[in-house]
Image (cartoon, rainbow, N blue to C red):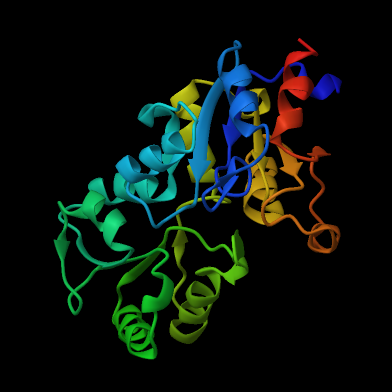
Length: 261
C-alpha cells in the first residue's frame, strides 16, 4: 500500500461510487466525512450531464453528504468554462433542461450554431435531431461532447449512454468531437489546478474502468476502482486497463489512505 502514502488529494466520482440513482452506497457518507476531515483535499468530479451545479449539489446533500459547491467539478461546468473563452459563441444545446440554465448567457440557435453541445437528453433523442446535428457538422459546426461514456448503471440496470450517439455523429460527418469530461486530461487538469496538487499526489476513485481509471492514469493520477455501480468483472478484465488497486466499495477507502500516513 506504500504507493498511497503520498496521496494528498482524492477525486471522487459520484454516480456508482457514492450512490446509484437515489440510493446511497453503504458506508459512503462516513467514508467521505473521514477523508474530508483529514489532511487530504477532496474534489467530486462527474460526467453527469443532466443536472445544473445547484441541482447536483442539492441532490448530493439531500442524500446525506455535506459537500460544498466549490468542491464539485462537473463536465458541464468544464464545457461552460471552455465556451466562456470563445468570442460570442452561437450554441445549440442538446442538454437536459435543468443543465441548460447554466448556459443561458450564450446566444442559441438550432440552425446557425457554431458549437453543438451534447449531453444526456434521455428519451428526447430522435433521428430528426441526429440528422440536424449531422448537417450542422458537415457545414463546419464544432461538436462538444460533455462526455463519451458507453453506458451507466441505473436503478433499473445498465443503460446506453451518449457515447454511441457521439461516435455515430463523428463517423457520419467526419468531424471529431471535443470530449470535455473524463477521460479527457484537460478535465483532470482543471481538478488538479483547483487543488494546487500534482498528478502524482492525487488518486481518482471511480466505477468506470475507461473514463475514471484509464483517464486518471493517462493524466498521471493513481486509479482506484470500486466494485459498485457499473463495475462488471468481465468488462474490466477485457479492457486492458490495470487499476492501481480494486476495492469492494468506497467504505474501504479511508483504511487505504489514512492508515498509511
